[in-house]
Amino acid sequence: MLLAKYALNNNLNIISMMGAGNRLNADFLVSDIQKTEYDPLSKKMRKLYKENGINSLKVVYTKSLPIKNESCDIASISYVVGFAGLKVAEEVIKDIINK
Image 1 (cartoon, helix red, strand yellow):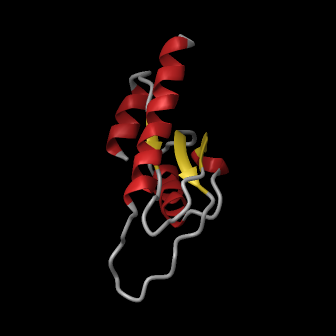
Image 2 (image 1 turned 90 degrees about the vertical axis):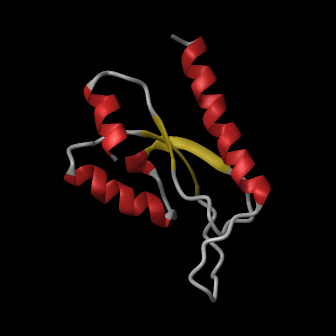
Image 3 (image 1 turned 120 degrees about the horizontal axis):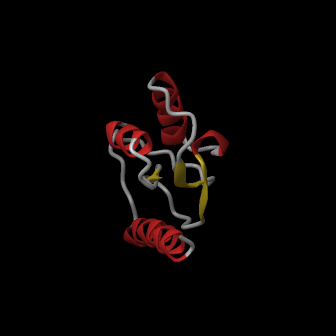
């Protein structure tokens, strides 16, 4: 949150990755944090950002619901995390090209 606030206050481009834990599907979307759906981490971050004066932030997230896990551990299948990172990289490259 502090990094996002610093970047936005200093007119720096930033993109944030939301939840990828306990997911099997690598169907990531790009949106404003205020338009995210179904992602528990996005919901928590929206509240935190709002409390700190951040009303808009570009994020990568998924509508894929987390798998229920009997333990408290958050697990990720390697390809899901990889896809998430590639989606963030894609958006950064697009932003650089379109500048």
